[in-house]
Length: 213
Image 1 (cartoon, rainbow, N blue to C red):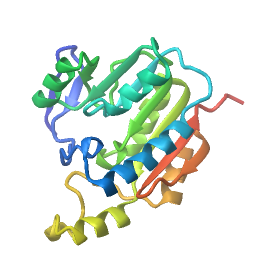
Image 2: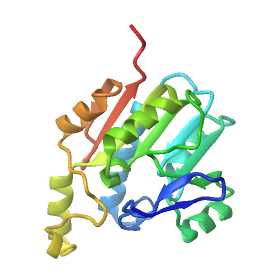
Image 3: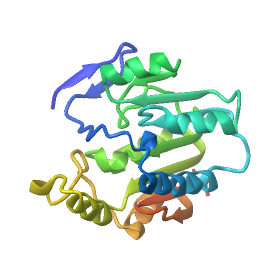
Image 4: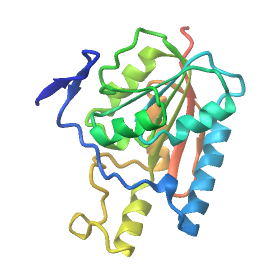
């Protein structure tokens, strides 16, 4: 495994798969727009009722989720990280986005830094999701929201579109596949699960940090 460092000195694994770069959030396809409306409705329902003092989004991408969070809680500081990508960095600069490069397995933040942590469509790309969850738990002091694709549906949809046929419809970079129940159990191994939602074709889990007995 090879490693690199970002400008802040955080260690990043070079061989972490980043997957495809299709921007579904900006799609004008009416079917995709309807799916995204359902996704964002589930996200809104999964967010905590009280405003967090600080937010971390892991896998910030083009910043669509962060923009939604800013609209909901104006003035709350939001930190965003993603894997190294020069085009993505240029996009952040264009939107004045507070993004940085880092690895989810080694986050460059102190313990208990954020009231709300999000990893939206991230863990399907991560070689060691348990390690990633433990790291999210380390920096989170209250609430967590995670989502992943329901891969059987995703693969079938890709095959129907004639995409990724050699990989039986599996999206590049998706190395972990979970059912709705399986993903809820995974998150529940580290956090207290509050709700599991199914915006088609995703699974979204709202959870919280466990209170010591």
